[in-house]
Image 1: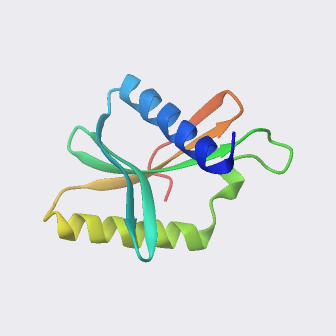
Image 2: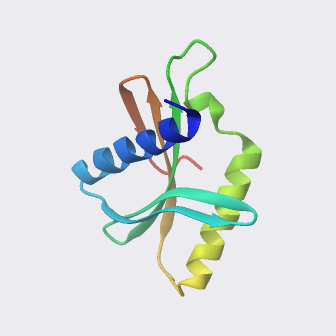
Length: 111
């Protein structure tokens, strides 16, 4: 499986997992020139912007260690653009779904 397919598979796993936790899917792979949002979900009144990270093993720090400060900044800008474009004035949060092999870890409101 190439890296693109792995990313799509990881996003599909994350989406299914989050839906099982009660979140409602809105869209995925929302791209802007300065950043991308992997998944956009709803959790009651919250708009949830989700970064999905996948690593086949934790040998080099695992999926969570792959979220950089620069990436967080790009995700925040992309989320701001999404909210403005869709005229959404509601609370939001930023979650990370880290997948290491078959282990799924969901961090809510982590940045």
